[in-house]
Figure (cartoon, rainbow, N blue to C red):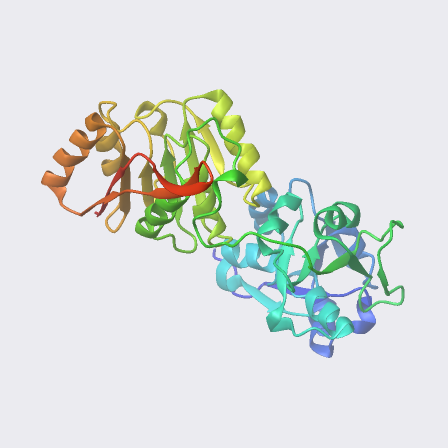
Length: 381
């Protein structure tokens, strides 16, 4: 028999505990048979309930928990739909779930600081790398960090303010100067340092490289043809230093990339570049295409910067794309241009030759030094 709708109520609760709940939230808790949440949250609520503390790991255990229990009230920190368990439960249980929110820690932090909520960047570092902060640290930007370690955040972002136990009797707001902080805190940053733009075409010297690097101007053009969109996945085939995958991922926090590289040394370098440029989530897959492409999640766009002359690479990439997917190939040698010309004749698309000359010293004067021209073929499936 199917369970009745809305037999799971998710109630946001703050550091002020039971007394801070609205009447509707208190009633939802009181009329439930089972109370679920972290042990800290369960301890905030008085009364006789069957109390179930979250197991670890949590997400794999959820289906069995909600098969076993009915008339459940789930306690969540602040607003359950803001980096909270509410979103996970709605994805899992659909319309079985009703959510009663509480002010989020971000709303409370902005109220204490006098910051406009709509102008603040929010970064969750719960079980995630501090490197994710790098792309949002731009001059004058106000950032609120959830789940971060003050010492690590301060080392990257400069002076910070720590806001502990917001809304509760133990609330504290103070400039951090090395003291121990409560784990239940929000970290506020007003960044004053320098930064790199998220616009593709970063300076070449921000990458560690052995020379296998798509140069700045060509990179910007290639990424404009790849046309990254939020939530989409890129394959960067023959990734070299990883610059295309990295700058794709930097365009939006939800853009994802898999860098395919046969050299283990270069693969390690890609991971280092991705972390230092704020996108540690770029996946590096070691192997030689086309065999290395088997079993990978299907992409929305593919860039081939190396290996286009290897038999089967272009066909495997084309086959992997769904309708609407974009393929961009850069060719430098006559042999790779010949392969591109054959595919262009078969599929059409857009063919561009890029010639870049950079000014450099010629004695006491300045002259133009040409880079090798690059042929760029782009096509949409």
